[in-house]
Length: 236
Image 1: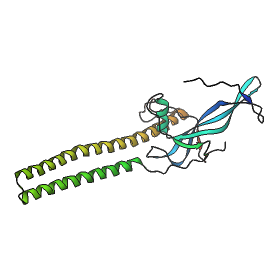
Image 2: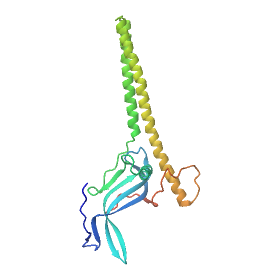
Image 3: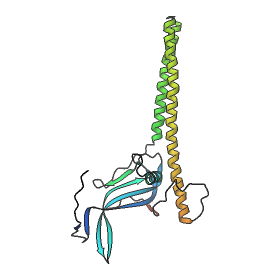
């Protein structure tokens, strides 16, 4: 990969500080409010983590560099469980799902409609069950027809084999759909557990009291700062 060209900071005509395309600040905040729907989360979240990246300006005053945030480039929101996954899985996997709240082009990104993925899992289980039932029913009807109409031993055996295969396939397919549904349920439980643990650990951090339930501190990282009310995106 070729090296990017380097350039010196420019002086901002209005603020008098230094600007550069590479200057930026990242801000992490914990927000609270009414239940929020987030990407890849089946829960509605009253407390979330927001991560924003902004342009930055550097000013020199009193022998010290002062960095001031500028226009927001992107802001994303995460559940407490997603935040925990993000900070504990550096360099692992394909990334953690987040909900984009604002970009340079769109300061007010549309909200995510709350559509729990467990509903999709249940729908897939019902569809798979219907397909298995239809196949077994058709195979049973073919076997009855071969017997009652006396189509012969060969036709009866063929119909019986089709029925046996349908029943065997139903068993394996049913196991797969059940496993998928269980996995979806476990993901929801894990999301809720991570949120609850993060709340408890934050309460312990603020009050100094011992938690009344057993929680591993490694499961939920400390949350950034006190919660702020959620009143929509701030102006850049």
